[in-house]
Image (cartoon, rainbow, N blue to C red; front, side, top):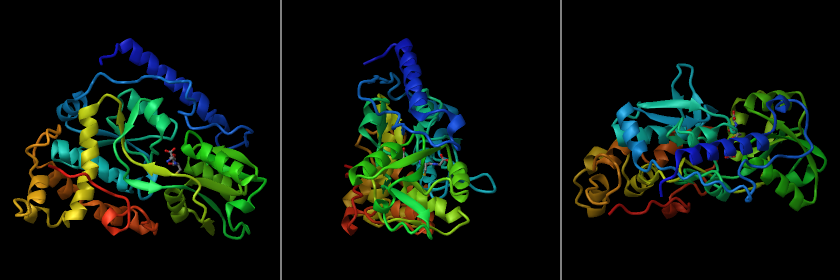
Length: 365
Ligand SMILES: N[C@@H](CCC(=O)N[C@@H](CS)C(=O)NCC(=O)O)C(=O)O
């Protein structure tokens, strides 16, 4: 269904207002504890806004015409998206930006990255400033429903955790009644923290922070007793923080992280989704960046179809889209080992279903 541009603009503006009001004032970001935790931007089911876009398919043509993908990332999260000293981007999220660019443009380097905060990320996607958001973003019902976004897949199954000073004496979150907790605004973490403490029957005071620099400042000065965010984010923080800190065993929520596209942008959504599935399927077939060329024309019909997809009708520009993707970034295990491995995070369910995990690529046929 086609939507009027005016309606779309109003919807974006309205949603921006929602996000701004839900995320609090930047002035308070690294200073005063606040009484009321603000929830995720998409927390109010009353505020349903239909942001369906009328550009189904246009995003792909726009990317091809401009010659690069606009990818929204974090930019400060080691293992997921990080800017190296030479200005290049690395990380699991970055590899999926590169994979989409490889599939559409046959060039994984044809990506322009935009660093986005938790607060600015959704409007950047809704307004069309970026084509795809791959910024350690959690897939939730209200982000799908209220914000008019569509999560294409999960590339990393995570959960919120709690980081404390190793000499704090806290053995689990249950020990933390009456503490001050650093929590980043505009995240799922805010509401999950509230629910977790509530279920334990204990209280806390949130200290809202805007970014990792503010966490470091507050943590090292002793302004907060704990820092809560995705466990992957805690591992990234711990890897760079100059202090003896511990991540408690509690897993406080479900945080399925992955790429999001605009609702109504179906062809591009398919491209992003099947790009992710290609990395799962390649691993299942034993196809890597090093051996993918040897598998082209395989006697195994399933592999032959996967690497030369003439029939599915997906909007990739060429039938060898999976070859392009795997040549550029490798299969899921390669992506994981390269980016998450150094952080020492246990793989857990982030393994193929054939290895005890929950990653499962639907078949290409
Ligand atoms: N997955 C959660 C949290 C995402 C998030 O923004 N996490 C924080 C903590 S790891 C972050 O990326 N901070 C880094 C920054 O904004 O500089 C969500 O989608 O809301």
